[in-house]
Image (tube, rainbow, N blue to C red):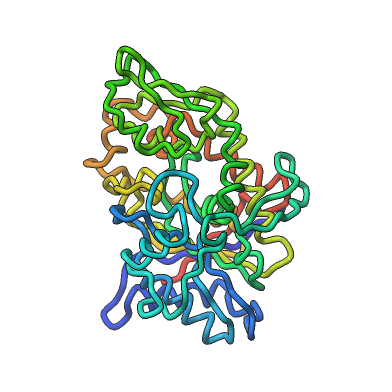
Length: 375
């Protein structure tokens, strides 16, 4: 696959130009106006952030994209699908309340929010996956599939199951309905290291499947017949007592996510933006956000979501660890065992390369890119 162009600008600004103006220049330079937006419904796939988390993207970034789409004649809306796990985004009512609480409203962004898979997360479309090796079809939120154009606006960060969360994760997992999310997750199962478990029971509070119980020693036990492998318990355990018990399930999850992206973007104009700031170690689905693991880096844009994510991965891995973050802790205790792969340092059981490699395999995008810098 040919080398893709990825456009980049750092977070520096000069007197008289805001970062938002610089972001608009970036997406112009990256070619967003090549898309014919006139009278086209445009889904802007975003993560509204779980209330309590403060690392999610500010709505100001979304307004830049919304205003650009409108200026080009399009009809934009911000969208996400309901979550599989316990939280304040697992049905459309609480999801909309969470979005408003985090500042996403028509008054702040200039467009409406639409929860793509409906009230209960059941309003989806079964979409063929061309060349899919793990998924022949994908269950995608209906409003996303009804759109004429798909854009992604993503907060780039770490992730406890996939290593990182970028455009691929935002588009693939994020566009799946609740049934689609279960489809992507259902090969992975979790297990509890009894020696490390302290019996705090926090994991059980976050298990929407009621799969976690407690034995006579008051330590957690996971019923694999009920577990869907969403990995939420892994992320909320402060004692690293829960882990994926299959060497291949995270690989399968990464590949399924990529195939869901293919279902979303095939046959439609698409364009992607990643904001690499407040790079938290965990997903914005958490109702908390740990300290950023590297300094803020910048904004990236491309027509190729795989190349875009790879450029962001490389930039994060080249950045120094924030000494007071979990990455700083890991580097002090493990002495760069992974060769300065920040994502593997934070989440050793993950293998982020699977997403990029599988995207190349199925013709979704390229892991090779040319980085073009905008000053």
